[in-house]
Length: 442
Image (cartoon, rainbow, N blue to C red; front, side, top):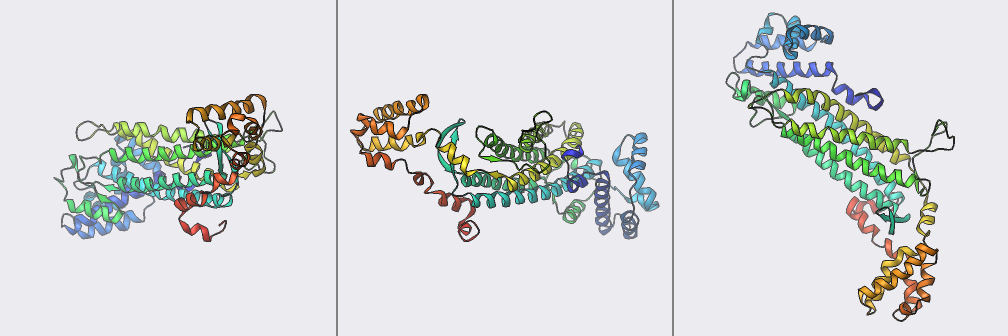
């Protein structure tokens, strides 16, 4: 992944140095188990830890060996033997390359998941704080991009919080599903290595043994993991697009923080563009794109092939690094988001009461007017607001057919904004639990 969209902790998980260190630990833990079983000398296992554990693996040297062997695991084992000496002959007993590669990938994805879960937790905290801050900030809700009925900005953010809470739960499940270990040898039959070795390595690495590995861990697990990242990216984009819309000049209800010295355009000095959320939309597209090749990796030939390998070398780092960066960026956007309640009120009233049309419709039906006639009466007055800029309340009060069913007081009562926000606390109870009532913003 390019440095522009990378953060160091996630990048470190996918570095060659980290990968080779994990490979060594897999091999060394396997040697411990083999020593317990009496397959290799205990002193050999001890030597492997002592000499390999303190070694600094030379990536350039491993690459040099691989150019000759055309095999990455063999290149690593050859380099490891340069540190360990004669006891290196006991390393990799009964194992195959996929035992090392697949188990390592599980460790890396598990570690990446931990960072992503921390990212989501930070985002959830930011969303909760801003949701409580704007719980009662009334704004217009939109459907199809058109004014619908009033809501609050806090409810918008509470919805995002609920969505990312589901994302978190999905990632927890995906993390567990991907956390399996395979040390089962060629075609996964344990013919040359005891299943105890797999159990021992899995326990040491915080994994669980793969029930049936056919030399490789089944790729349905990986497909679900990357699909989960894709869903998280889509939820991220949904919130980013909402902010982008709200920042449009004609709307301007919320805006990305614009720092002192920041420039919005090389040509137009007045511009304040939603560059962060636009960037998030682009990054979300990339994370989603990695889900499809992961799904295509599921169908391997017979017990194994390596068509998945080149895919995973790319999407493992790129998907997790990109999503890590994007979630952190989104958290920053939410934390610093500039909100304009006065513009929300202005936009809400832009069509002079039109947003209360459903309440009038329902009142007419409750007064005995058929739904069809009630809809026609309300719509003909609403269209005057759209086309002629009339005041909706005044038009209704002047409509003799409406007044035949409803009194002036009954009509005016339908224009109370508080009616639309009376259940906001209930929504917040469902999202945050009732403890929010005792905290800041209650």
